[in-house]
Image 1 (cartoon, one colour):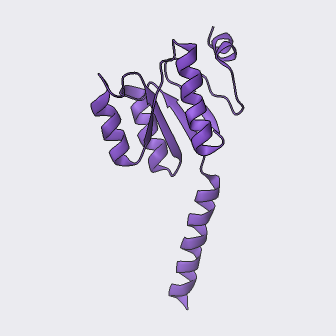
Image 2 (cartoon, rainbow, N blue to C red):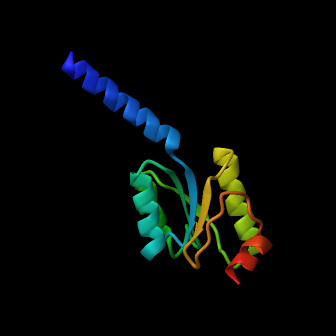
Length: 124
């Protein structure tokens, strides 16, 4: 009886964690703080989109390493509005929602959609 109760509690705990997980887009995730954040949040059970410039070029190895872990990668250049829009749109289409945006090139988090001009005004 004890074993079955423990198994049930562990199963319920797993379901609770799943329902609490978020979809998170992280910019600047090819290295440093952005990459550490992506890996940490992924290990904590969240769905993570790691964005960076040059996923097929200079950051190809970083992107491949993240994908091997199970982290999705997105081509995104935070200095280019069209690139930001395309990257965010990809995440929204894939997941139908995003719970948070973390820009490691500054300090910004948004629980709601925020346009590039909105993000620039917060970062200014």
